[in-house]
Length: 355
Length: 261
Image 1 (cartoon, rainbow over the protein chains, first blue to last red):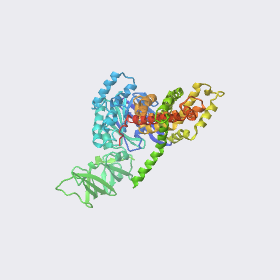
Image 2: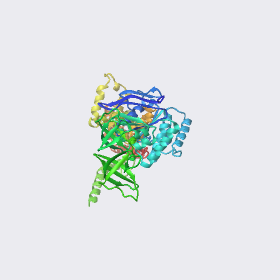
Image 3: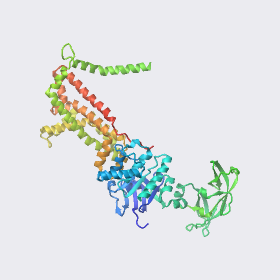
Image 4: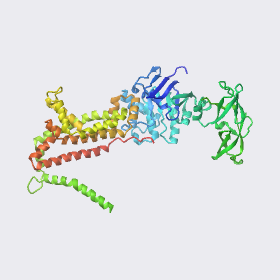
């Protein structure tokens, strides 16, 4: 990234003796959509609130468009924010809500009206300007909240779990709409969520957070396929973890449940005899031997769940359980619990977890 | 059978409250011998002292309400926003006027602000009016604070404040355009209660020697027969009018937005 639009430099935030964000560094490019993903209490909302100015960092610096905004008050930052709880002003109509920021900024009335009409068209609710918030559905309210945040043309858009209060169907359609609007306006956006599907589907990059630290910042593809830590691997998607022992560090041979796996990624920092945690996504594992699947492990069928088009099978490999899905084939009966089984996979799909 | 006792209890309660009022109203209409008339009311309303004291007290009530709103709304808002841990303490402080008699407060005022003190407010009519207004505001504080605090509880003060801040609003804009309009009904409830309290208050006005409606009612009661009853009915009418206004105004409250699940 040549010139970051938003820079968070060594941000730390403590509440009394508890540090909730530590050494947080992130550069976000102009027009980029970055999601903060993590479980509750990981510090993602705290970082967002520091960018907005609602919390002051205990240490570090926040730069927006090259300007240091660390000590600026929230109303001096020109940063739009959408809240989980919508936060529309109940005493104002939809149009007045959208015009609020413009009115505060002293924009002439005619210009305000023009901008409100533009925003109402943008969120596809041109006929609802005269309604009050209580007359709208949750999805409509959140659209209005988005329009209100965008109306004063902010430098940056912050979205604090804007979809978590909505039902599943609305959530999917609204997230696509948010992404489309963001791309159309080219506005730099930070999106906080604990929903990995949400983050994976709409982000340019994801910062996976854990205990106040960004464990990995990368594209959704990278995060899912090449998680850099055990936490990221476990948090994003489903993962099978196999414990093994490195028997040959030069060739990357690992002993797992009596079988040998030759890793394609060499484990340079480890030495023979070290314990190694290997991870496999369920979709990379097959039940039975297939040509082209280089690695195999022997085990026993531990559990079979019939899910209609898919059969979920859990195979016990040594002390570990490997979960995988196979398509339901009517002419082939599903495996039975207790039967011996062989699982196969490509060595290239094995992830070596860093702690 | 259970319903019978419930109705009986309700009826007994209504009689207990209504009978004295009916008796008083009936007595106020009996000024003219042998027939009902509004003579007592006409006399009271025509009395220049009634007009003077009533006008004075209404004026004082309006000033007290304005002072109360400017003091209580930002305080209750700030406590909810920034000092939530102090809420029990602030609530206790606002309840003190119910425990401390008005006579103690007014003697305290006279002692602190007499003509030989560093701030001789009692030395002028304006100064004394100011003192009386502070006294009224103190007496009305438990009701005003509770009304406003209850109003603030119905809205998400923190998120609305942050939303307004992110749109560039400062504290004055937030209070005047977002918070106050959303708690206006609660403020009006407090205002009408304040109005009723100020109109009927006797101790402070009498000891500070101001021409208020409360001392006038007492003076009339000490010297006349029918007029005090008529005056009491008028005072009740004003109080009930205030209560009715609270009910009417609350119908026009901005509805709270539907909260997410």
